[in-house]
Length: 275
Image (cartoon, rainbow, N blue to C red; front, side, top):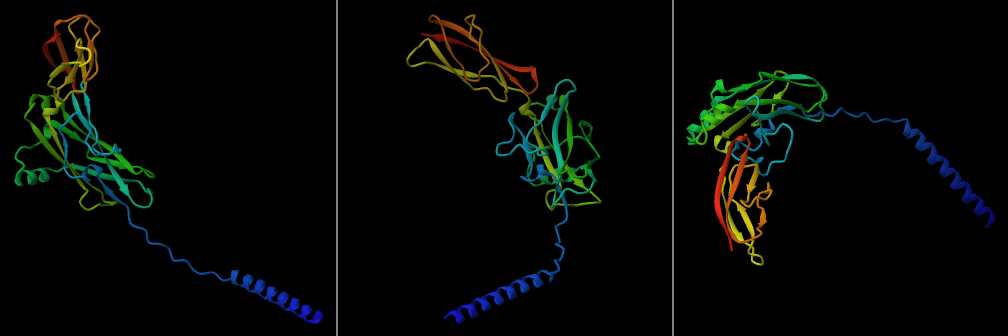
């Protein structure tokens, strides 16, 4: 039994040495790896992803995430009298290498097609009433190049509330392909959103009749100013509750302020009876 044990141990040792030698020899063998073919970079307008973008309310578009370069917001500059729509060109691909230029131009053909298809409410935004950069540079290592559509604010206000103006914005580049279907964004501006209309209703509190609940019915407003008619400090809440010190009739005034500020505010007054 002792000789068999030594023989088995020798066999195990030889097997281990063979395995080590095989492992070392296999490390010297390398398999060539073929370079991967990555997709080319494409450029596109995020504002074109969901089709025509209508700016018809004071709030950002419902359902849109606030992504830079997408038309999720606008800026009203009362000092320069400009209605500014921030836009941007994105690049897609596995990396952001390379700097290049992107050409930008208005595209009235797209709007003409919309009108021909039956959208007769809109009018092509006159070229004299907006400015748009001819090109924008995409920096090396960046995925976004920003630019603005700037519209004459006074032109829009002069055509309030019925004017509906549209512009197509197209991009192209000699250095990058444009993503199919995402090279033109359509922006539609409804002038009705530029000025507010104030209004409210009210009801006494069930438990305390001298406490009045005000329900704001204003449209296209972003800020509010209430005068409750009793010499109190008032309120800037949208739907305030105010408690009067005694029954009576009070003249309540609501000022609704829109995106253009105090110049175009709307005022609504109502006599409120407190039992």
